[in-house]
Length: 272
Image 1: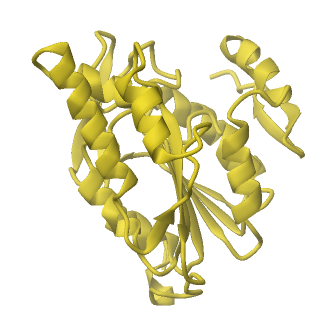
Image 2: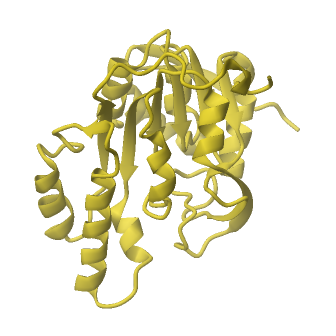
Image 3: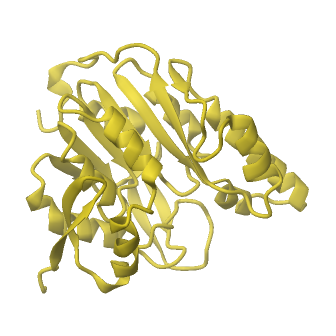
């Protein structure tokens, strides 16, 4: 097998080595210009540090986890997409503080992963959407993931293309003292596609489910802004209820207290 080519790219203040593949070059230009998810990198810049373990659930081709490896003590990447896993594995030798878990966040031992626009795109989902290829992948529960991460403080980013609605109860495990913060991407348009019935009913389901996700945690406090929207009410009304197609957003939750440095015994660290 021919070795995958790599190249260096600078974005949001860090130079990162990524896979040099033609299908991503247009995206890389957007990334280098700072136009891709600036709020995500702002949150990572604010909340990562040399004492923080970063968990990236839905690591895609490594754009956020490898960038974060420059700022965090340790990085855990959860990625089930077979093409993305190949890309990530080719880069891992360059990032000694990054660990890849080749699985999907799920309480199930095995789930079906669907490629909406082919594997390797950013839209692979465990939701029953699209008519592309599919593959069975291993599941990893949040409890197991937190045990692997070990002592806090932890910062977690979740971007799983609509599956966040299905496993909301699983996400509740993050409402824990060692978790410093969570950035949760919500995809109401994808969730709406999985619903049945009249259009107004499906929109209402997506609206209610997003509201519940925004109020998911007790220890972790939702920030005033939701993505580019000044408040949750504005997002729910303008971004979902009144929008022709519901718009996605990132919801940032932060611990109201100082995260515990160690809330699990050291022997729970992976490999021990």
